[in-house]
Image 1 (cartoon, one colour):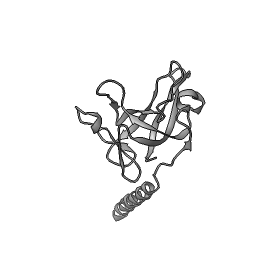
Image 2: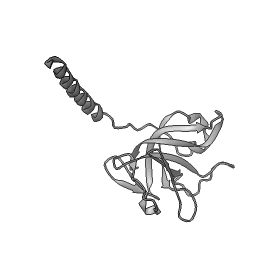
Image 3: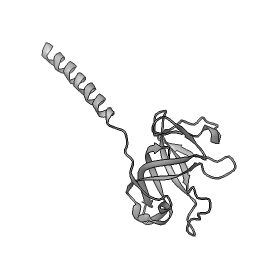
Image 4: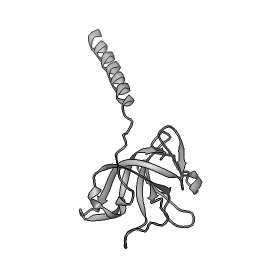
Length: 164
């Protein structure tokens, strides 16, 4: 009867060691660098893993807001050049979706009643970025709507955050 117990102990140890080694190589990479303006003009970047730099924001209104669901929160990314205007009929900000948590590449959980000052995103290296800061994000771009029609601006499912 000791053999099954020994196998179970060895299997648990191997699993623990395997998971430990798996976590050591999980740092997300930066993607192909593209100009942020392409998110507003080029639906052909759909599906690309890319890196863009912009200004972090929350949706409009006096207080601003963000939506959170299933462990992710949506913020906005805008073009850092104040003189840049999007094409006619396209909004001036792109949606960026962050995982919620306390680690690098994550957005801090928001309290029930929050202000812009509560919105914090932790970059690689531990620096905390807030609304109005320049931010470099890497992730998967989505530029199609549910009917496979081009939908601009593109949005991003963020995997990595860096300080530009």
